Image (tube, helix red, strand yellow):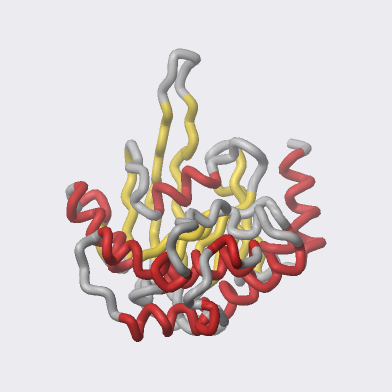
Length: 246
């Protein structure tokens, strides 16, 4: 989709993140600079250990960089204390992971409403049902996770992320536990969210999943090493093969 000349939804400027252990330092990110446009869908790919998940966690404020700056919706995350950062995440971003993280004792409706309740916020029933409607599960609002398929459970997790209409959705291997057919359903939904103006940043190892994105960003050894725009799965797979042979 055509991007307007506005500030990016998420921007990383010379971000460095090093993990320290007894075995030695591991440089997970080595000066990464990248901007994620508003209303875009970006897939992040790279070989194992390339820094994909670290980039996602740093961009989402789940981890702090050692150096550099991360800005989300115009707010520099390093300017926020832990409490303010937690509040900012609740209102400005949402998360979808490979594990659905649903509570079996709760209905789909109550799983979507749970984060608001845990935060001590009032629950808007219409907004909960609207989130379920957006993922095609309004009629299953009273079902518990054990009564839903894997694809339906992931859609409940996405509905939970959509509650409150966050500007940015971070997804870490959202189709990793799904079969190909249900994975495509989830990817089609994420594509529709980006087309509707929300920003989606997704880590994946699957070239087919990445082909749903506007752009695929490649990492290797903690650095960005290239990108492909609106590429098909074959082109993405070829690029990944080249990186893995390095």
